[in-house]
Amino acid sequence: MPYNRVPVPVDAASVVRKVRARLIPFLFLLYIVAYLDRINVGFAALQMNAALGFSARTFGFGAGIFFLSYVAFEIPSNIVLARIGARVWIARIMITWGVISSATMSVRSAGAFYAARFLLGAAEAGFLPGIIFYLTRWFPARERARTIAAFMSATLVAGVVGGPLSGALLSLDGAGGLAGWQWLFLLEGLPAIVLGIVVLAMLPETPADAPWLTPVERQVLEAAVREDVDAAAATRPAVAAPFRDARVWRLAIVYFTIPVALYAIGFWLPQIVKTASRRGDFAVGVLTAIPYFVAAIGMVIAGRHSDRTGERRWHVAIAAVVGGAAFAASAGLRSVAPSLLVLSMAMLGLASMFGPFWTLATAVVGAPGAAVGIALINSVGNIGGFVGPYVFGWIQDATHSFASGLIFIGALLALGGALVLTVRE
Image (cartoon, rainbow, N blue to C red; front, side, top):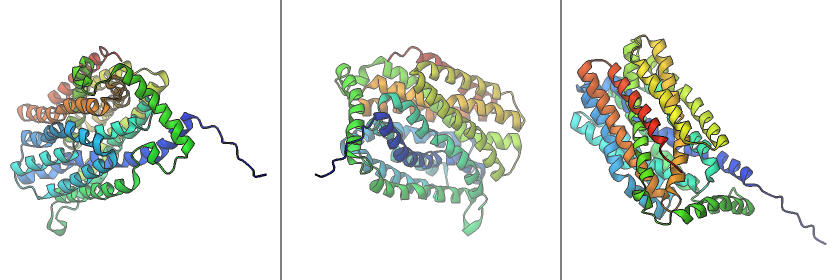
């Protein structure tokens, strides 16, 4: 008589852990490269602004214009992603942005700089909300805050890795007849092209396409995710519902304050540290890694605590107020050690908002309109990515100081924290 093995029961938690271990490290790497290509202009500015004669306002406008095209193309990009699949579309996004990022080495004027940044935004449009939409297909709602926080901590790891790396690339100044800032753009754009090709081979579309899941594991995971889909479908049947939901627009306004702070500090931190420390480019790159390192740890801890308690709004609000207060407090500091300490607290508060915020947002928009709703919040919110760097540069030109700009982004972040408390799931 043949021996029949009794199937071992599989619980959803163990399957989620397996999926997290397989998907998140790779997605994490993709987002490191994406964020590095987005903010490396802040390090390039240490040489590029003087070489090309850019004022603070010119640099701020060029750095921020990325987000205008990003916003313009984000919802169309996510509609296409939902129709043709995340794997192909994310690969397309990465390859085109890598090419444009590397090509930025050839800019010689403000107009060319604006055009390169605008095209980079158009190429990358849809990447982050596309990934978040992709995660909703793999993780039940109760697991998303820690998952999103783990994935989005890549923005902070990019700051940790990108600072020293960008500083080292700037030190290639003159090699091969290229300036250091040109080497920076050229070499930091190439990984996106390579990884875009790898996405096509490695990223499964849904649990049903994952060869590393057993049939039973696929069934358990799909059932866990389907519970959220069915519950959301019962209350939000229309894909267009996010456009009519006041809570979605409030979340978009809250999210607007996050990129204002994130990219104002991301694009200007190297220059703030350079002014405070008067160190060389490589040393500045190393010092800028400190706030990102502190924030990366806090982001994961905050996401786990939010999942453990099931609470979202107060996690976002408290983090926003703490971050905003620290940004404002850093305005009165002049020496490098206290500045880095307070800016690390500011980045800690800012980063701790991400996991709970996006878990709240995906719960509000619901499954039927998830791709469009997430893109809507991210699109409206990312206008802050233009406003933050541009206003910061305008203030710096007007006052010849970073202080007023830091107070501005701190106050705005705290207001976003207050507004999120009005949003109900």
